[in-house]
Each structure stands twice: as C-alpha cells, then as structure tokens.
Image 1 (cartoon, rainbow, N blue to C red):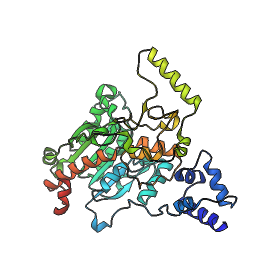
Image 2: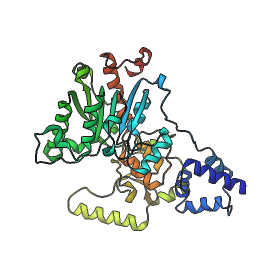
Image 3: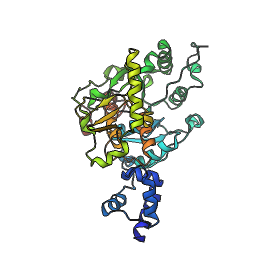
Image 4: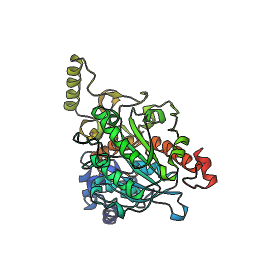
Length: 399
C-alpha cells in the first residue's frame, strides 16, 4: 500500500504533526510512533478505519475569526495558552485582532484551532503596535511584586507579566477587560499582590470588580476555583456599566464525571493505566500522609463521582490528582479528550500535540463555560449602557 503510505505522510506534514503526535491523536499505543513510521515506510498497513480517521482529520481551523463585517466586537488574547478564553468569546461573535503566547506547543494547538500563530514573548511587543480592540482578555501568570515600593502604583508592577497587561491597557484603552488567575492570587502575600493589581487598574481609570467562581457550579465536573477580574473604562461611562454588570449566578447544574469519560474498548485505556510501580508509590505516599494527619496523596474517581479535583499542568507526570477507577486493574489517567471535556472544550477542538503536551495545555487552560457566562454578562451590560453596540436580535441570546 505505497499509496496509503504516501497519503499518510503528506497528511501528517500538512497538519504539522510529528509521528508521535499523530500516533497520540489516533489513539495508538505507547510506541505508536513506530507504527506510524512503519506505515509511512510501507512496512505495514493501517486498517481501513485507521486510514479513514487520518484522512478525515481537519486541516481547516474550526474556530477562525468570522468575516470582519459579521463580527460583533474585537478582542485581543494575551497569555493565550490554547485559546480557552478566546473560544468562549468566539461563540458570542468576537473577532480577535491580536494574540500572544510564547510556548511553541501551545502555539501549535492554537494555530490548529484558530488558524493563526500567536505572537511570542509579550514583553518584546510594543503596545503601540497592537491593534485597537474593544475587550482585552488575559489569563496571566501570578508573580509577586517587590515589597520595596508599594506606593509607586504602575511602576511597582515592572518586571512582572501583569505590567505588560497594564501598559497595553494604558496605551490602547479597551472598553473592557477580563482577567483570569488562580484563586490564591486573592490572598497572595497577605492580599498585597491583588490589592496592587486592582489599584493599578483603578488608577488607569477603570471600574473594577472581581469574583471567585467554581467550574463545578457551571456544569463542568471539576472542583476548579478561579478569580475573574472585570473592568470597564470610566472615560466611556464605565461606572454606569459596572453598576449594570453582575457576575453570572452559578446554575449549579448537577455534574457527573461519567459524562466526560470516553466510551472506548478496554484495550484503548491500557496506554493510560498506571504501572504497578507508580501505583504502589502513590499508595505508599498516601499512607505516609495519612499517618501525618493530612489529606495529601492521589485521588480516585469513577463515573458516578460528582466532580474531580482541579486538573493542573503537572498532570502529565503521574496523574495523581485525578485517577479513574478500573475494576480489577490499576486506575488510569484521564485521556487528553477527557481533559478537554473536563475544561468544557468541545469534542471538535483539535489536539495536534503529544499526550504529555496536551495534559500541560489543558491543565493550564480555563473552564470555557464559566468564561462564556461571564462574557454574556459583560456584553449585556455594555450593550444596555451603549458602550458596545450589538445587533438587537443577538442581544436576546445574552439576556
């Protein structure tokens, strides 16, 4: 099947995947890259089902910008990761005019889904070169500020990645912004870090509010709490808009871990089943922690569990925070597709990287449904106070 070998290789190269990445996307075993290599060298042949799956892998980005004339508002996507925040706003009609993400593997996933490679290191980007936009979006890393000043306002943030957000807001003056961070930001350094962030944003003449929201309260079976910071430009009536804005009320829809688990043949999960050595280490460490009187250690879940622990970027290491029970055998890690679902990503979101990178990316990302509900409330308040003009028939969706 030389023709099949050529088709597979050309398809993989068009997708920009390595043999390892394609093997992971298809769901081959631990040494799947060897299988891909044999297929491409005509040393063995894929089944008809496998070949069909490869050929049907989409080469067109599913979430590219809409035609500009159909866009409802413009956004920029900073510290974009794989675009979870952008994805939520995309559903509501956004047109992204600029994005930034330094990690090359995240850039790859971003391009596969949105059709563009984000700019790299944001600290190297001149704020004057960024296009005008309505809403700034950023899931920025938390960095401590120096204790030396704390009265210099904007200057105190230099050397932190928050400073790059602040300098872009100061220069481009978007009508609004949405920032996302870990819940711990609120109490970091006895609250000084968050107070400094909020102070700088208010000094830039924005009305600012924040809330800690939990993914499990928005239909996503994950106990993930994050702080969300919303601001509206006072020079454009931001105080009035903020008075009209409310963070979404959590619907607290009952969740179930089984709803995000893949329905596959048992052999598929062998790749994700942890080894005896790793499992024994997990059990030993948990027993040690229990003797010390703390609750650290691995956590087990099954399809009937209400929700999981928070997935983190380190999940690829040992999966200890979320292990899925398997009767009669060792537990397993979540698959990348299950990680995507656990963050509320749609099943057609492309994962063009290895499993290890996928775990990092989804662990670092956001719960998309939470962002979407916040976005609806922001757009509703901005529209009602004429800060953003949206078509009337689409406003119904936001009500």
